[in-house]
Length: 190
Image (cartoon, rainbow, N blue to C red; front, side):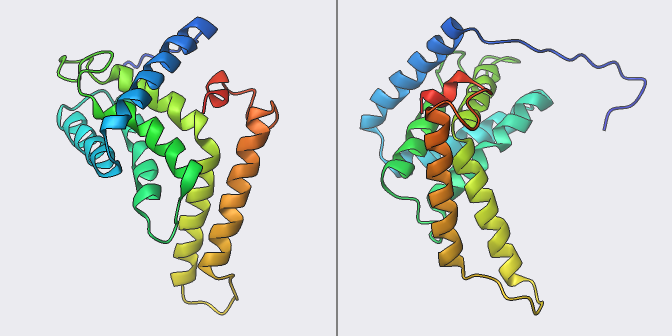
């Protein structure tokens, strides 16, 4: 919570098509470099980056974006979510960028080392919005199943299938220029 006497500054910027192309190139490089990384190294590397970034006490806007990586790693590690095939590859490819501490702005650069990560997280979260939304609904349903009440609820496996099918449909619509397409061009990249 901000004290009313503490001044705040809101910074907004718009990424042009050439800016987005620059970041897509960075994602491409991370995807190519991913050939040397197995899934365990990617998820461990992302967890390590988050821990180091939070320990560096970055600005709040960076912390907020760092927390968005948790569900992406979570959906890979969640045995009940069972993310497989192309769906799993999309998430791993997106996370590969965050494994390299010497990315666009080296993470060790005091004060600004995680700003590029915050921008990339925003773009990745936008591109993987169908995955993030489906997983959040799945996790919420799993929690609902634990709640003691008499209302019948569909089994978790059934909900997983429905959520993953919905995720793929939404992704397809985004690629076709429908749902979510207006929010950012990065969706077409994933």
